[in-house]
Length: 126
Image 1 (cartoon, one colour):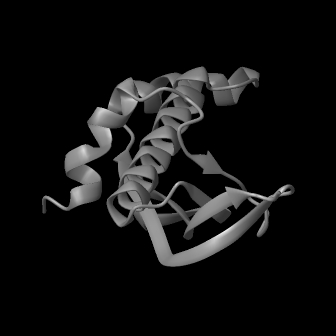
Image 2: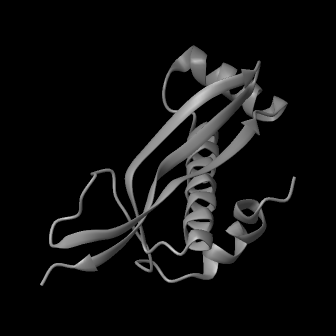
């Protein structure tokens, strides 16, 4: 499937930070929402690989962080946020409020990370 969010998410890596405000709160201090554009979301599904599972098994014996999984999940979160931004930009938003991130198991060894929120247009309060 080639949705706009997936198609444009790679372009967002080159976008300067701060071009779109994304916040977990529902209103932004010193700004007012002038238009609500609707729900936006971005997701990714990732699977583990055998190499990481073997390393994780060893780490389980001695304890500590499994840095390969940490890196994979961080990359997955960023990809989900990039797709959310792309969907919001396609609607004409300059902010996303009420951001939430959730995970779910899709099948053994595969997990989805979903980022969702409300795309809005905000303006500074004068």
